[in-house]
Image 1 (cartoon, rainbow, N blue to C red):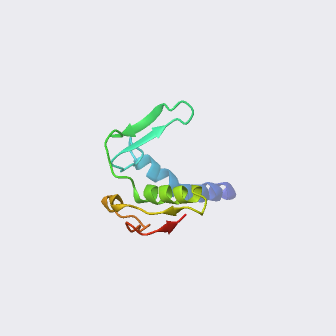
Image 2 (cartoon, helix red, strand yellow):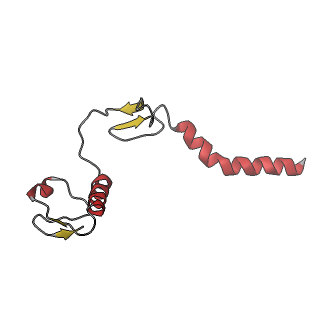
Image 3 (cartoon, rainbow, N blue to C red):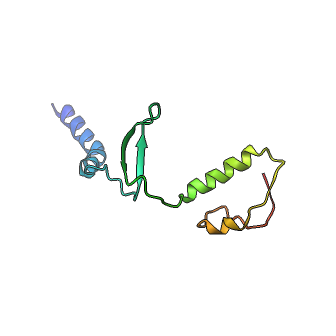
Length: 104
């Protein structure tokens, strides 16, 4: 009987940190984002969301990935010169300078 008790105790101690926070999350699953949307990939049916029609500036990760994908698809031979509108977008980690030449 003792080994079975030890196994159950071990599993409770190992799994408790994962189960207890999930129980405390509440109806939104602990999501604290200002706006979000979850869409089913095949039918584009909206599964859940919060204030997803609200206009918000893109996250820094989105801006960085968009720039990297655009430069990658240009093939390495193109010269890209950002205009002054680049400075209107909140800063990201790319640190693009208007008028400076960048090779893709």
